Length: 136
Image (cartoon, rainbow, N blue to C red; front, side, top):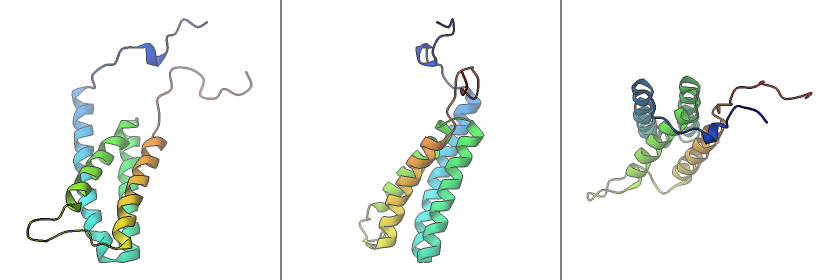
């Protein structure tokens, strides 16, 4: 047995103030990307939809790379989800952002799929050890 304890056995620690501010900024950027994507996807149907989803994927993967953790992808995904959910609600005046069409549904479902994929692709921390375990 090794004298090193598992990462799961260690107590959780609060993130530093800088890391918390970075996650808050990524959350806000996720909301902005969700708003921009909602407006762009309806404007130019095939190209706008792809641009919106690629923009979201770029933010999520960039956030995961910058924060060096999966939380860097989860924070903007949360901002994106909240912004898009608020935009799906109709207003008393009858205004709404998403029309009942295939592009809107592809944006909503595709955006959720992109968020899940990017959050799981984010770099997970591995406790000290060899980066490759082959040949042992």
